[in-house]
Image (cartoon, rainbow, N blue to C red; front, side, top):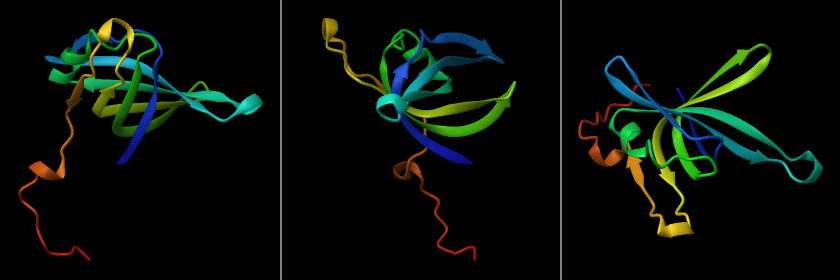
Amino acid sequence: MQNIIISGNVGKDAELRTVRDSQVLSFNVGVKNGFGKDAGSVWYRCSLWGKAAEVFAGSLKKGTKVFISGELTHDEYEGKPQFNVRVGSIDTAPRSEAGASNTTADTSVTWDNVTDLDDDVPF
């Protein structure tokens, strides 16, 4: 498994749908890369599942700054690379207009809630 942390902007309003009795929120995040005439963007297709998908459904609008951590997969479609992220945790940057607040939902496993650790080294 490859994990990735990205910071960028939502490309268009997120779409909430139901897949096998579970909610999934799909959205694209653009990340700036390079400087000057070499500047460009890398786009990531993101999916957020379960209760967190419902929580963020109304707040991930085009242009929203997000900080994402999740599992990265890479595909190729018609010769173009496709980067997909199954979101484990997401943070939205506070917006100054209308006093919007920062919202966080963390669906990842953290070391704080892991209780069964085996001290044996596997090698």
